Length: 309
Image (cartoon, rainbow, N blue to C red; front, side, top):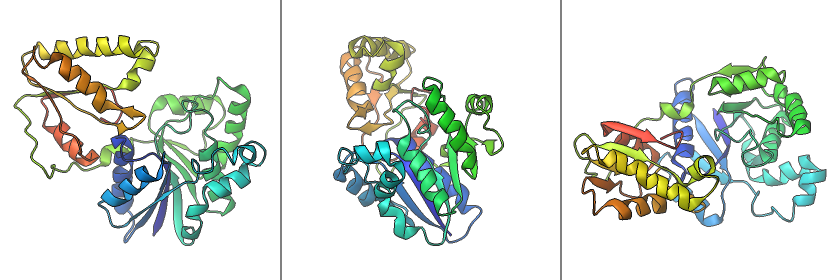
């Protein structure tokens, strides 16, 4: 019972880790003695090696796509011969395909235009379909692709070829129906929420009736026209509102990737307000998704900007 979970980001985004943990819990409830091959996109080898080193589930084998290593060299192939490009990018997974029960495309929001055209994820689909292995988009949001009408037409022809598309919110199912994709679409809960919380190995002092607060640098895209300074000032004001309740307030990170890191952002807020509000504190660095879920479960109230937090 081997399953390939493909297309995820690194565990530095605790949402990506939560999707993996929740998905494995679901699959384990239906199949015995499972083995998991997780093929993810990493920015560099160090990020990949850290994930391998700190993995706690011995049934998991982590692999990385060749996407970044050969990105520039393979650009012409990507444009003119996407199938060959896909085969090269996904070469590390080839030997694991024998006796694979299914390939699940995980990651949450990959099938959108948020990060450009989802070319690699489409090739993951085609890679499995060519080998007649069940291929599912798993617990995701999909679309919209309406900003690029030609690409929307391409996706409306591609998506029905998948074994199933499991969607985590109604707006995506409505969009897919509007472009003629519905027969293989099913509305489900986000698998990340099935992840079990785990009490942190190191003692975390969670004060009584704490308000947990997660704010991310990513929010500047939506609240300040990508103006970092303006969003930072606004985030300080938001935090101050919570501090004025008199309850303890814990600034809680969720993503610590080098290119999108909550910690420096929250640290700046903390440094600006800590002298004025002694009830403000920060969650200790280095916790896994399961440990952060446990901490959040101990809060009196929690407000999070990150989806999975």
